[in-house]
Length: 49
Image 1 (cartoon, one colour):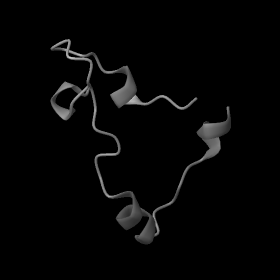
Image 2: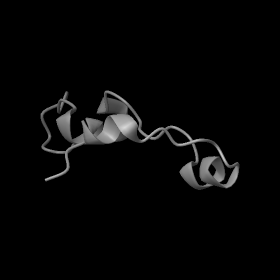
Image 3: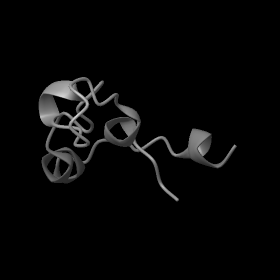
Image 4: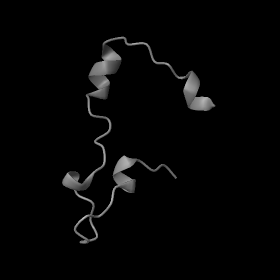
């Protein structure tokens, strides 16, 4: 199971739906495809600890 910030955000108004205004974080908060196309170095060593 993959669980992200949106999944763990509190349902502040108790309506059973976690809406964007309730998210703890908005991840990713950038265009991932644009970032990958810019040939940035991906540091993946920490992903497999």
